[in-house]
Image 1 (cartoon, rainbow, N blue to C red):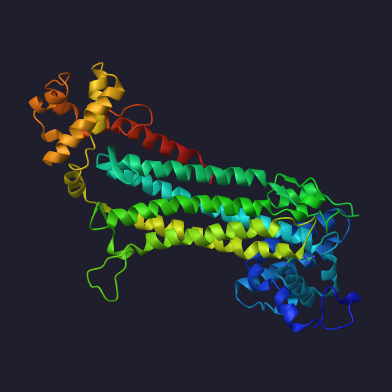
Image 2 (image 1 turned 60 degrees about the vertical axis):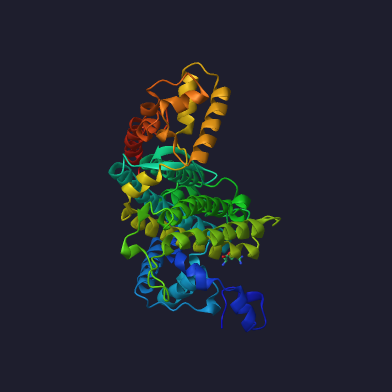
Length: 461
Ligand code: ARG
């Protein structure tokens, strides 16, 4: 089997080496980037008089034919051709003859792969961002639908203070909003085009790299040829961003799982988004949330994988770097699937308002508000805290809620209490008095929803 680089070799390549060395099985997904990059490169070569116009036309038409063949499933990907770059060039030679060999003028696979993978991950980063926007829209819709529903807020997974369910949802809105902006900055940072760096040192041809950058939708070419072919920090950075998204999704998943338990029963999943058990007929399992939570492991693993591969690699290209692709492809595929299935599931949940409300009587959710009441009547907060601690202990002994206490009972702990105490500490009051900027009151949540909508409108995707 002839190789592109056979000139200095005297023996056939070992078969196992061929298999070991090949990346075609996974880099074929970058065919579009490879072809688009090659077309831009050939146009530049013609513009600079390095190849003839008619040669460029043949090259471009041949490449477009190959794209078509790949998309129709007619293209044969072969291990012997090693990678997507050589597979396409080889096919181009079959179609247009030896002029195909001019395409690789002033180019190396090192800058070619750096370009392809950068374009591919930038494209996918935009897709991830679009999916996050859909998630944000679902969150806004749910926050509006269930705006007034009050749930217990937790710290240490112990009941803490009552909050609006919509406030809880909007917390995730903020997290995904930052994820979207992380992607925006990522796209901005890597808006530089590496082709033209050659193998490592640039080339002896008079290239117009700015032209190629423009053709391919980049603002400018990269500045240092060594860096252009050596670094994979953009892959690491996207793997990191995906890890953070996955972490956010995994926390949300955990809450969905908890909320679906019989012990909580805060929400119901739609039947279309839950699964059953093969043995226990009563089961309705939140598999989606569990799997999204579970995928976080491999996504973190992919980040650690590429970080470790790149550690201590000398400049410039090393074959180790071929290991940059499978991990990030896996992270991209899994995060896209996870975001989409998660927001579809979320969109169909129903909230058991009554069940939540009755369950809120236990847990002394309004204890802080009793302390705040005293503090607002001039009792130092630390002292107020102690008094309410004693009230809670008293209620626990009597197996009652603070709201069940009579004014005389309050007076056993402090004579500051007046007969407005019970109306001051209703669950609704506890929520709506938390009106400090960013707090859980309805007014604040409405502001968050408005701001959320404005944020989504300003996005250019
Ligand atoms: N398949 C290779 C990769 O993914 C392409 C670059 C190969 N360059 C080389 N000099 N062997 O990294």
